[in-house]
Length: 473
Image (cartoon, rainbow, N blue to C red; front, side, top):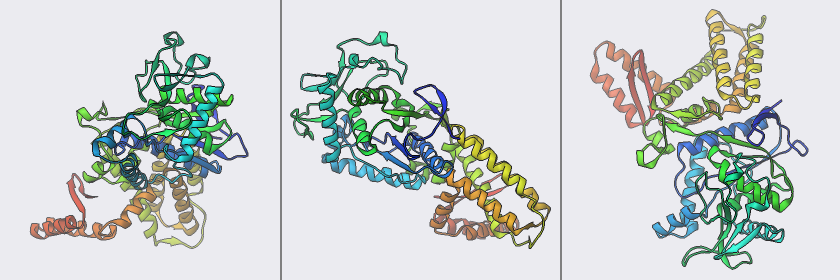
């Protein structure tokens, strides 16, 4: 039984899809005006685990939509600054996002619509017309606004204090302060040279909030959908406004569950370009860390808790992954196997599986799930130290580790990275051992030759207390 915290109710609830065991899920994707940073990817990695839990633990078929917001104030300004068409400008950032998603082991989803796709613009037009027909809009200075006073439940997701709402106040930009409660723009006029579409109200372009409602309803069908998710910063105004326009247009609940991932901080500070602590995946990789280590770090804390990214933290993530891969390598290399006998791991396998799957079924508790894995690894290593296991025990251990990783997706990602190295892992480890022996006999010239050879092949060696570790450059 999967329990998920629902922002709408402010409590954990048992999750089941509303229709025929098929999950319909919408995730607010990136606004493609720049390369995604590691804070963005915390959200997408955590929600990738949700997808994996739904598919691999609950066995639900799923249709998931992650959109690209390719028209808003920022994308239009960025395209203008670079002298590109909006499509050319956003194409390059979409390509970067897709590359980073793949590198982080985020599974592809069923739909990746762009807001400016013709069918989505048409859906936005139909939604605005329905809101107009029902009396929820008004026009002013060329813009069409949603009148929040016509939706008595406005603020139910973010728990807004309705006393602060000022009737008739309105705002025309796509993003605004969390305290700024005003009628929001659905359709905006455009300036000369800006991209525009005509949905029956003259040339213009959509407001940010309108886009996601239209794409979710078009691609996922009759509301309510099962899950709507994104970063915690989207609760207000974006998701609140999505609810207002969707529910007043359809007369139905928009989404049954609202799931939000907390902020990522860097070295205890909010990410900000002015402080220089906004990092992208290529920047993390350039410092010698692999995407699998970042994925591990992003999953090391519960998704509803703020996570502090530190360089020592990603070092620890590297070490944790190394422990897991060393354990899997030990299993693969195990040759001392008994042909028959009584199982010595059955109870440990059952306990580890129960603990892991219960943790992930309890609001995606990845931290507890990782704890269960490392306790299992320790227990099995102790058994292997004490004598050979029967073949069926080794198979059961490997199957258990594979099942864990179907949900977390870190060990398979590390293996995939290993295959892409310019030097096989076994060769790297052998050369590190040769280098260590050379240093012991004070043949520093030979030791340095090994270091430089590996460096030329993209492998960086670091000497630390207790040995040497390596990273992909």
